[in-house]
Amino acid sequence: MADSLAEVLVDPPEVAAPRLLGAQLVSLVDGQVVRVRLTEVEAYKGGDDPASHAYRGRTPRNGSMFDKPGTLYVYRSYGIHDCANTAVGPEGVGWAILIRGGEVVEGASVASMRRSRSDDLANGPGKLCQALGITLGHNGTDLLDPSSVIRLVWGQPPEVIVATPRVGISKAMDRPWRFIAVSQPSG
DNA sequence: AGGATGATGGACT
DNA sequence: GTCCATCATCCTA
Image (cartoon, rainbow, N blue to C red; front, side, top):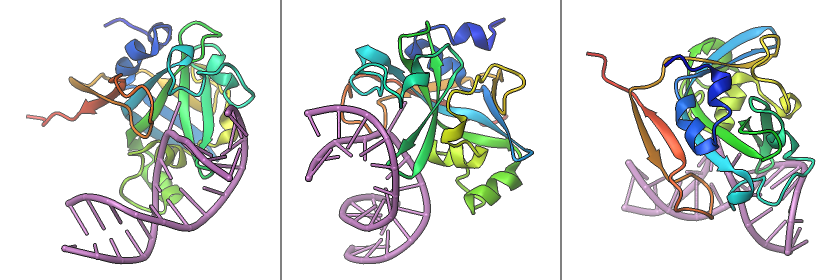
């Protein structure tokens, strides 16, 4: 359990992804702190994975997926929403983990303002980015650099993790590479 | 409670 | 022109 985040991010995505559950994404956008505990992630495995943006190799859009582990890859989804990933594995392979959802543990009022809502602040990839203030401009950020505006930090792992097929894709449905943290009744 | 749909931009055929 | 790693809103029950 003495793992560091940097250690976990070197693993292949289907191994690293479940271990990111419980970690926290912290943003310092516009001088406002928002902290989200990750509860839902998906693995995308580059050239081996037809559902991955990196399947056909490196392009200007997906370039940061191929960067060093812990690099933030942000893409625009359906022309409207921004979604956040972290690159994992060796540099150059195009492996990544999509951050699909989490719960706001700090800065809920800021997140509510950005979302124009008080519920469903970060339970979806587009919503999570909006709550944290992550946009395309943050693409390429080093999530492990303490001076970055967006950072990934270690957190308490959940006790129960469930794996399911990934959401919103039409290929490689046989891979159960979506991982969700199941909340435990505290008793 | 659950299904359909429009918004909207970039990458690819 | 078509396909998306989505979401909010508008419908029908």
